[in-house]
Amino acid sequence: MDDCPEGTRVAVGVSLCDSAPLLWRHQDLRQVRSEGLVGALLGSLPRTPRQNGRLGRPLLLLPEEERLLSEQGAAAALPAAEQDGGRADLRLQVEQYEVEQQSSHEEQSILALEDRKSALVRAMSSPGAQSDEALWGRLEALDQSFTFPRSALAVQLSTARSGLSYCPESRAFLQADWPIRTQGGSRREVTYQVFRDLRGRGFYLTSAGKFGGDFLVYPGDPLRFHAHFIAICLPLEECLCLLDVLAVARLGSNVKKTVLLCSPGTDGTVRYTSLQWSGMV
Image 1 (tube, one colour):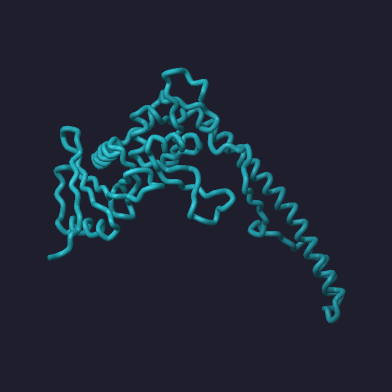
Image 2 (cartoon, one colour; image 1 turned 135 degrees about the horizontal axis):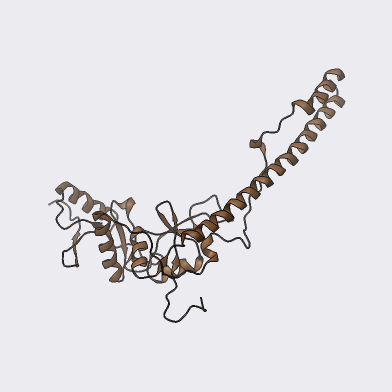
């Protein structure tokens, strides 16, 4: 990073998994957080994989966060050629893994066969056992009839990955000199204009799907503050059913948040209408 020419803005590296924009490098996570973008961690921690209370990399960006970074020249995707090189390395690692698995299966098959033979020998020497002829017959036929299923294969799970890079982007120096994919659609445009306006006012935003809205709006870092608003993005000309208005207002009251109806205007500004449930008289 220190070798970057003056005036050149270094971009965070965005990996696209199908349609999901992901950040893998820890320096990228720190950079977007310093710019007020939160995202959502998806990965399990290597040493505590069987819990979901604390998650790790990668960081999933909202589509609006990805677009904002792209417009600011602060994000870039790898060129296709470099991504192909990364996939070639991945294929080589997969082939090596399969070879190791096959070798481990053969080794464990031999050990399992010896263990089965030892069990039969112990049975022959125990009092009240079957006739020696029957046990000897089973022992001799064991070499031809014994099978060790792959489902019984013992697999070592690594809890630390020292020196292993997370993705091809970690081996590349990214600059914002090529575009990220474009995102269209009138609905997406409405939510992005609201996101950009609220972020420009200093608010932090996360997804509000579980609250029935588009964004949860925080006055500061979500690690330190609770959300104050539930933002619902609507075109200015869209009509709302009165029952829907009552439902979202009651929902906001139950979770102690104010509902914001956010509609971008034709002049580039965003109009906000706050809803609060005051009960029935």
